[in-house]
Image (cartoon, rainbow, N blue to C red; front, side):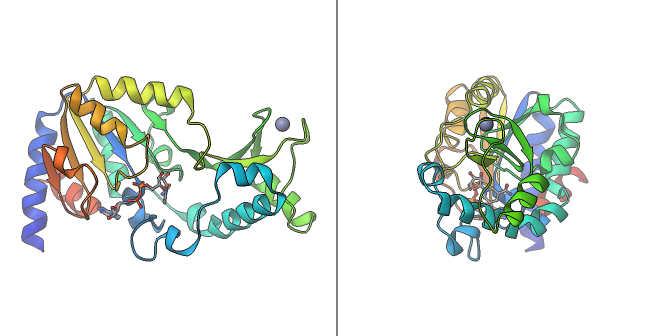
Length: 253
Ligand code: NAD
Ligand code: ZN
């Protein structure tokens, strides 16, 4: 296994050494070493709970209550999580000017926590560390939502400003994608020399379209994931290894 990591680190080191205008695209796999489970690995979140889609959340007070119950149950894992080796490596590459930006599917806020400025980060699926009203977009902090939820015997709170439903600021299945984030991700993907995928199974669309766009626009597509992904056949290089271990070894080469 240590030989595998060495070979993987050499391949990654060679990519990073040539990269001048890279873009990183991250998924749940970059955060598993931080204690946040991914979706599709054994023991991942989806094997336990079917996700609540947008229409159900909007239509049903019982679904809203269930969504908040799950969110607060996750709180312990999310609140204590610190950035991992992959997050820190990407922050370093941004600082060195070799990466132009990070596109993430993650909702855990760990890229920001590693010091990445908002201007260099695109959150395609939103952020679970705060909430917004679905009708008027007013922002609410989770502590406020939790206090209301508990005070009203696990009833999901409505917006005091407009009575609309309050939802964690994440994008659920069936919910429109955030237009500004999509436009920024598209622009980054169209103008990079290397497109680095880290820790995504690449099954969630439209997010998984960005590696395809980058490749079509002439970027070198590099996928780092410990399991096969949907786009391995399209990639110029597939590194099947643990993200933290391979970045550690590649950056301290
Ligand atoms: P996914 O669960 O579909 O895929 C994660 C991939 O990462 C898997 O193929 C797994 O083999 C790989 N992986 C896990 N740990 C790894 C490691 N240490 N090194 C290398 N590879 C590793 O996740 P996805 O593609 O991001 O799609 C899931 C959706 O769920 C996304 O839309 C995302 O918004 C959401 N999600 C987010 C978080 C988070 O914010 N941390 C966690 C779970 C799910
Ligand atoms: Zn409102």
